[in-house]
Length: 216
Ligand code: BG6
Ligand code: MG
Figure 1 (tube, helix red, strand yellow):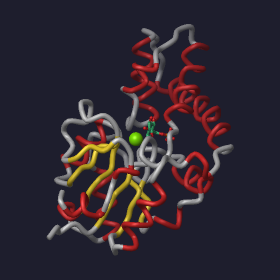
Figure 2 (cartoon, helix red, strand yellow; figure 1 turned 180 degrees about the vertical axis):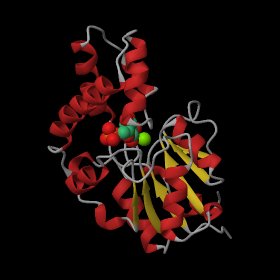
Figure 3 (tube, protein in one colour; figure 1 turned 180 degrees about the horizontal axis):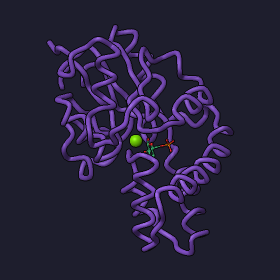
Figure 4 (cartoon, rainbow, N blue to C red; figure 1 turned 90 degrees about the vertical axis):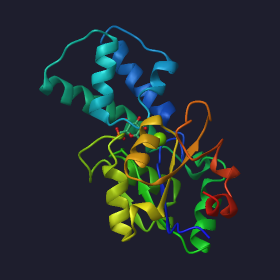
């Protein structure tokens, strides 16, 4: 019998595919600064906070900016990003995500969101899934970026559950590492070669079952 009591879900790449919007907005910014970067490089930005992502991108372009200029650039990127996510609809929920959230709730597991994004509320409202979470923890509540476990530890605390009774669903390497650093079980969403540190990897939440959860 498993001792798991709670499921903590990352948002971008697990519940919805917002990586494409992040990529478009960051690329627009990079292009404006006179350089470009690939979709492959964009992989490295998954799970990383807005300001940390910007620092990585500026490094790719060998562009140096002051702290104040970086705040302005991050905010400009966010304006473009928000323009896109405020047009999102429930059709953009990834396959099986809503069904699996409903299934775990029906089986009396607690649920939390554990996202680095400061836009998680907007996204959850757009796709109509806010009601399926018992706790919402995102970039507005934490100061340390994944792979630091802070976002998941705050989630466990808000649910009043021990970290060892939590399982984290993550599509980013930094997110899997964060969950492990917090002594939580991890299910990687995506490619098993990339997410090899996870306890189990499935291509999407449509492949998850209560049995797989209990066997972790
Ligand atoms: C994560 C994304 O969920 O949120 C990252 O994977 C993103 O790519 C981070 O940088 C912060 O998002 P936001 O919405 O606060 O800019
Ligand atoms: Mg993610």
